Length: 206
Image 1 (cartoon, rainbow, N blue to C red):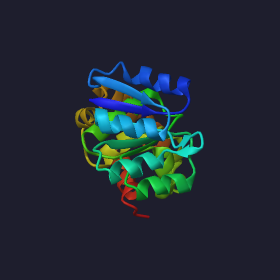
Image 2 (cartoon, one colour):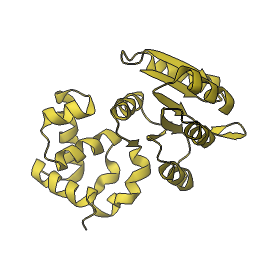
Image 3 (tube, helix red, strand yellow):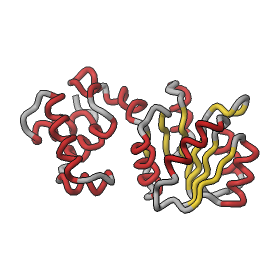
Image 4 (cartoon, rainbow, N blue to C red):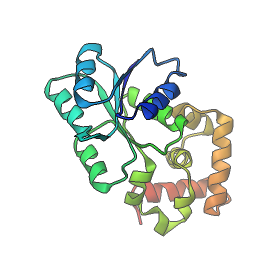
């Protein structure tokens, strides 16, 4: 897998590259600091995934997505930003970007997002989509971590720990720990209770 990292801050860019370089699936990582550099590399190197910051000095990262698609450059786009503004996230959704991740995310979550997106799915940071589920009004869902929310979704779909582990690229032991934490935070004793509540929340049932 070829990946292009676009960020105008050298230290941030190097940090992202360092995080990704440990992954065997990633064969090549290139860097760009502005819109023109990014478009040139996308046209020449054809990265499968392009990770872009929204605020590139006086430029906007969304311009990369718009111009790349206008020129029919094939790449999946992940917005990796410190912006949690509703308008930025909604624009990203309107543009159908493949991922939207806040820079405060853990390294393992960024790796997980890349693997999910590489398989043709989308990944949006749970901190951005959580308000859409009104979780805080129904239970202590605001206390769950991003990974616990992913595990809860799996429980709601009726998946076993082994199936959830495979889907999230983590060990079955880690899934068991997340399940225990979820039940404890939600004040539940049984997995079935969590499954019912997950379906109510994620399917929009009140």
